Image (cartoon, rainbow, N blue to C red; front, side):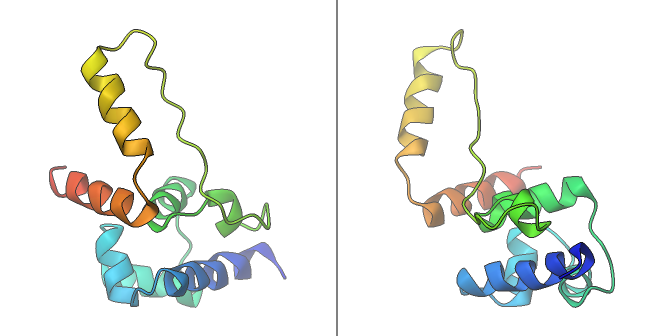
Length: 114
């Protein structure tokens, strides 16, 4: 399968695995629903930055969406907290313990403040 076909198919597969409609996934990713639909249909190609954002919001990796790997597990977020306060460390520890659905909800809430 050519890479151009992987993004739409895998995007749709990941959306369905998350039990989201196209409109719900678009809202979660803060992307216009018609644009998201065009990505899924292969009528438009998202930039690498948009792919990375979608991957984070849908709990997968940009490498998976682009066909660079068969592993759909999300990419690890690397955060250097060596010089952060104990409050930040506590928040990160608590966040790490959340399930994927809870993390997505937090990201969606944060996006509303952007």
